[in-house]
Length: 292
Image (spheres, helix red, strand yellow):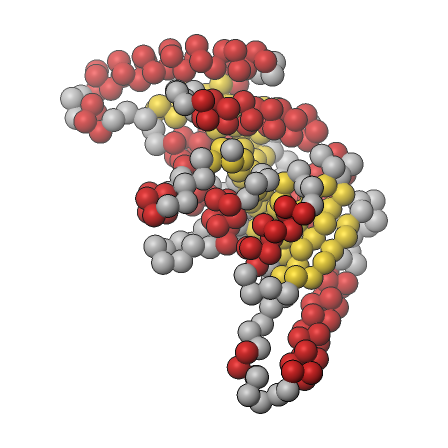
């Protein structure tokens, strides 16, 4: 790791996001850059104040945010290089994406928000779908943890070249992250039984699951061998992917879940949801999401 981007959307009193960034930076020698969101709609004042007065109010709001930041950062030592900038932009997600295009980061980190409706997509999900760098989402109730492992969620039945490439990307990133964080590495795959087959009874379900398990093990062997991951660190469970991933993460005391996303952006993707977004709904673990 060389540089981590931390995103602060508001005057957060809890410092879990920056705490975790500093923890990672100390282990890897990375620098940290913080983007601080500051924006108020001042258009309603156009009929009341002149342009110079509006500009003065904007500058005053930015200075208030700067004062807050200077107090916020006081409790941290200077063992990690931390720079910051305040972003005034109505469309903060677009501002982040444009910033990342102009700078080089290993990943960005931000606090997670898990509420979504059909007509409102939180900034987390917009960033997950659009970001060209990995997304590190810090759990809402997260505190600095001492988890023992990194959990990779792989698609061991991937047929397309894109999904196979995503598996390799996950393994390479996860292996490097685990090594620099001094964590063990585990992998999991969910065996989803079709509803129609489940209707035929327990024996058919078990037979199907056994066949998928054998194929998944064969497909996993060269991937695990490439990164020296022990066979016993592969977990193949029956169930829906989001449930299996969260259960295995708890079982192996994962510090973080690393998962891939094909980045569905159309309406079908929004209604159905990517697996990573479904995991984000239920897990209390931090997540790193990698896209293609």
